[in-house]
Length: 490
Image (cartoon, rainbow, N blue to C red; front, side, top):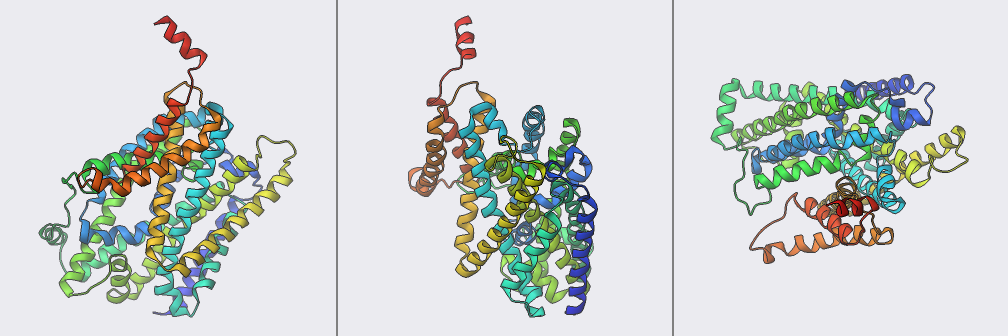
């Protein structure tokens, strides 16, 4: 590989991001950083969200999973699709009604300050762990295929990437992220399409023969009909819908760009179009995975699932395709990290420091605190990546993902209780309930095979988590005056 070309492309790529950051952050104040001054263009937000939703882990792992699981992942994607309509027509109207900058302030308005604090706290915990795991996994790939050949050690490459992200997000915030995510989504999708075409041409088969080979190897099967399996289709579809509701609709990172659009109607339009686009993009990733598997099998190549895509592109395709792949991988990495660090900064400043509820936070003071918080999260991200590298244990990564998904269960329960009931919660019991629900889910999940005749929990553990939170809130809550009056009329 020509290292000079790779370095030149990386420098040019970063220069473009800095130029966008400079252009979008002119005269940017804290309001612009947190909400984009409510002036974001809906179709740019819709397009950029593709890159945010499809992280670098998806870029590598979804194609690599096709050999073992065919297109079963698409069941989950169908669930995602359904969930986006709930976000568009249930949650977004709430956020616009209250004119929220931090979506967790809804919990304060409806359930009280304790619910608000715990909701924001679960988001900060979950997004910090989830984003750093994604960062760690993708830096590992870049280290293996790029930085090692350039003689750059892992620690230096991690610091370099985090520095780049901080430099173009520190000042502009959401206003910058909307534009950089749009650019990076373009590069990611370009790399995806180019790699599909390059593999097809390398195999020397037309598209009909390629599709026939996929069918012969049972690589296009979508439905899992064994209800005991984790990827049973109803588990995936229902679980996928709730994953979207929680990890998009109840996630400050995903919502901050949506609520930066001027009107609710445009924000809903953005969400609906994005949901249809994601169906197509995920199908392309799965198609790529099938092509990769057939290509490797026909030549007797043996790659681990997560090494299949980068390995074939590096070892068996022209150098130019590999460079495009690297640009696509970087473009998949940045949106999942730059948006996270910006959202965490916004949530910490608004929800923890109290920019909007405490006196004395002048614009100058807000800017100073915001930048220190932003830099602190960058340092925390870097230290966690070093920790994962030091442990070098994939089970740690899996555990972090499980913990991250469990933290959305209490959020689901809190928001559902606020939206679906008019009852008054017992403030002092909320911390106990928000901790107990995930603990009970862990115990149930661990012993489900023995207790439930071989049943394995999949993504529906999130629903159980939210349901337990909702149930405990219900049994410890009281009727409001309005509910008492309604009961008396009946």
